[in-house]
Amino acid sequence: MIYLLGFKNTADYKNTTPVKMAEDFNLTLINGLKDIKLTYEDILIRYGITYFPEKDYECKRVINHADAVKLAIDKKIGMKILMKNNIPVPKVYFDKAEIKYKDLPVLKRMANHSKGRDIEVVKKLKDMPNGDFYVKYIRLPSVEYRVLVFRDEVLRIQLKNKKNERTNGYVIRNAEHGYSFLNDFEHDIRLEKVLCNLAILAVKAFGLDFGAVDIIADANKPYVLEVNSAPRLNNSGRQLFMIALYNAIGHIYDINMFSALKINRELDLPIKYVVRKKAEEEKVWVA
Image (tube, rainbow, N blue to C red; front, top):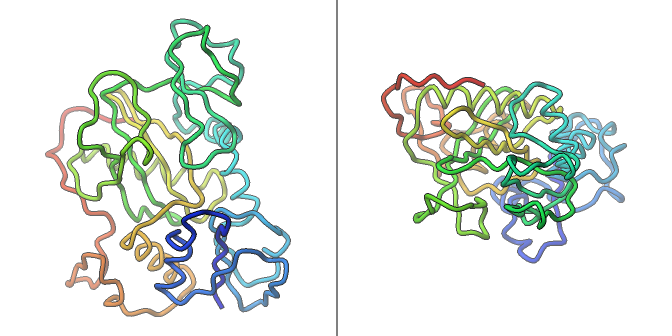
């Protein structure tokens, strides 16, 4: 049996990714593990949940172990993990006393947050609020991506987009500020390769099987912002995830089940991420 462990205490519970995925693919959705008796034939998927980590050793396979999810949830620890693994991140300050006038603006961050609600742009030293850590703001024009990874494979690259994004001032790219994800967009081919490599390295650094990696790129280079262990996925995202899961566990499936995906009929495989690519430019993107 495949158990999918997801959050229950949310106002929009019925529309969360674990609920939708369980409905679409007949998975056993659970909200806790206290009374669940796992067997060595069962598979457990932790979708951002760390409860009862000892249960990870009672089943055949775990997709995202509790210990790895715990690291990803704590964004302060997560930033240290990325830095330790030489993955490029924006300049980070763990003590606000380190921040000088020339470093402004910065983003105040908390170790634990949901949907980026902790993020605050700080433009003046005298207004510096207390935070768990602070990150150098990557100025516009910059572009932010979300890269969905399962094991050593990139399933999808999305662009965080807002129809009327300001070209000056400061923005926080999340749903509360009117941003959504584009699957179809133009970008530099070389940048795509760097995004894929960075995202895979970031997920591996946490010991995760899957994760959605937020990466921002300016004119100089891309920077990893964080790794999400419970990303919100739309219909096509859920289908891509399940194909990767089925492949990982050796599950036989009919490719025609995945109606939201464009299929390469010659190879009978899904087109993983659909983007219109610009002609290669002279600019060389480096990690």
